Amino acid sequence: MSHTVLEMLASKWVYLVVGALKPGRRRYGEIARKVEGITPKMLTQTLRVLERDGLVRREVFPVIPPHVEYELTELGRNLGELLGQIRIWAERYAPEIREARSREGVLEEA
Image (tube, rainbow, N blue to C red; front, top):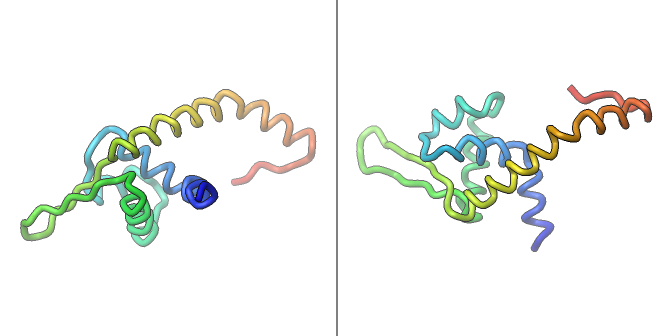
């Protein structure tokens, strides 16, 4: 089971969507604007996976046109804290990783 969870967490879109929801509830369009480069299809898929896994709560308001909001659950907020720590680690050690790559002749990814 852990490999399934790790596979989901390895998605950059999961990381970015969770980050976009960290401040609080957002509508679909707000999330799309926060997560640059994500296609509508990928955003929908990512939100569905996060909802299925209990990390995001989706609330539909009975109005016309439909109004839907997304927010992190407690589990999702916990993941957001962990991902924040990973970001801090990555920023701290990125120069060392870049240096190691240059020593090995590995080119930076775009």
